[in-house]
Image 1 (cartoon, rainbow, N blue to C red):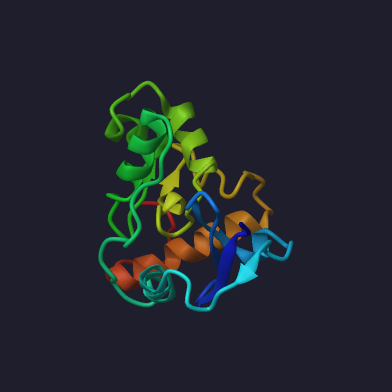
Image 2 (spheres, one colour; image 1 turned 60 degrees about the vertical axis):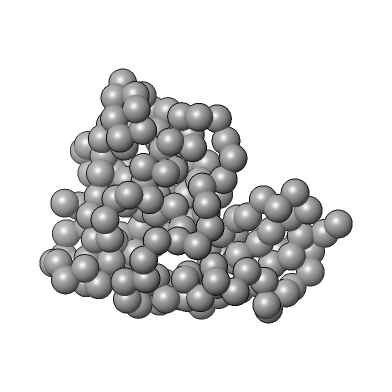
Length: 170
């Protein structure tokens, strides 16, 4: 059975919402994954998730309509804890590790964020390094479009939350 997918427009570009034959849901920014999605385009796929994603960078939308996906316990705890970070705020990888139950596992928390299958729904862009932005979507290069995207999302969220948008870090 092929995957089903749809494209959703956000203020920072298109994202692809997809579900595979095992009901594994992914959300990825189209600009970071240049390949055409595999499977069947379904413009009616996961309507509650699509509406949430379409609005989440425009206004406060409440908790995401998709549960934290299956994974090892620490990774699931990281993804769940990440969803608790308020819009417009950031936490360090060490703080996320502590929120997930293991304060000494900052690197593992970083790995969980790097392997997050649901961008925006699990807002890994809100997790930063103690020394600055950290990485995003698999890269930490300062000139990367990935880090520019992370900064742009944080700036939009700060604006939505009513905070200052100039500084993407706390």
